Image (cartoon, rainbow, N blue to C red; front, side, top):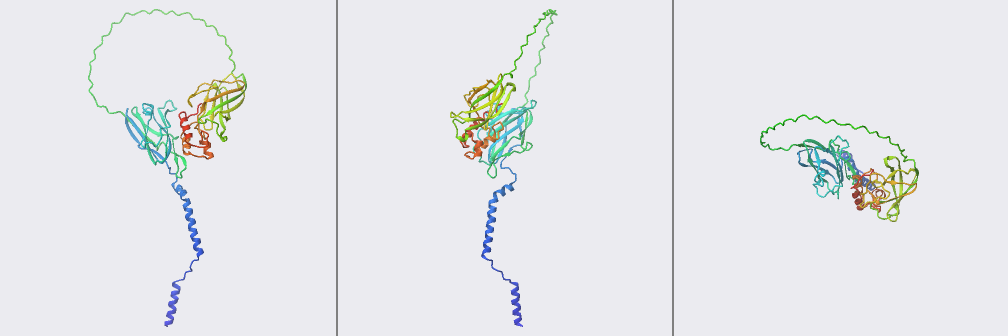
Length: 442
């Protein structure tokens, strides 16, 4: 009996405490390798996962510090803006009622722009006020372009100074063209859209200043005696002269300015801003759009011309045109692939300072055969880089600023303005100089 109990106890122990097989070393190594692979994948994907879960939250934003302001007539006041994020440049188009307030740049101040964060931005590259295209509108627009020297601060603030003109109210709203440039969450350069005008705005109400009442003395007027009327005078009758007979003039027939025509060849010499000598072989051919336009648009021709670099720093291009009217006067327009369009009215224009040559009516006369147009005493101003839009703005400035030191073919093609094979501070200096003019001439 006792023996059966021992056997039963052994059976119970046998079934309640099973035996486990020891894992093989090969399985342990495979498991450890799998864990390492998964960890490596998660580490590699971490930046992308952060950007994915961040969604469309902008890295840079801007807002007005106050939504409502009140000012007295004649007072000066500030509109303040805060920028969150490492902004490299800010191009602001601000709309307001110019009948109620005025920007102080238009009056006694040299600039209406001041920084709370001192020295973060250089002086405004563009600071101008324009009227509305609607002649019946009192709306005005402030165009401000500011560029940072470092782009390293996470929060900055600046003020715009205005003066209250008369009682009323006006909204300050940003135009849809406004943009901020900086770096995205992955460190790449990009542009950020600002909130719509319904969100990004501030309101200013202008009221009369309170005036303390004063006692005004009352005066009793002294009556003025009425003069005695003079006797009635009889007017002298006017003698009408006899009509003069005007002889009928002889009509002289007007010659047709389009009648005399011929084949012409234009040999054009130009100079590019910042290029003082013949560049490396990779840059010795310069494509440009050239337009030949007669006064009153009686004749117009356009072509893409290749200008070849010369040893003296000039560029020469040739254009053969058939059947050109020879009795008209012409204007020549030239636009380089990184340049503002230049309007030229003379066959030999000159300027002492780059960009100062301007003209109104074309005075270029053409003859059949070769016509030399020596435009090498003026400069094509650089800065409107591809994709061109006829203006030097924040897009152009920030592209050059963000690619300092770049030698890549794509970036040099766009941002190298002096054709030395690198995007650097020399290119920025040229662009800042051209910003004084900034628009295509037409």
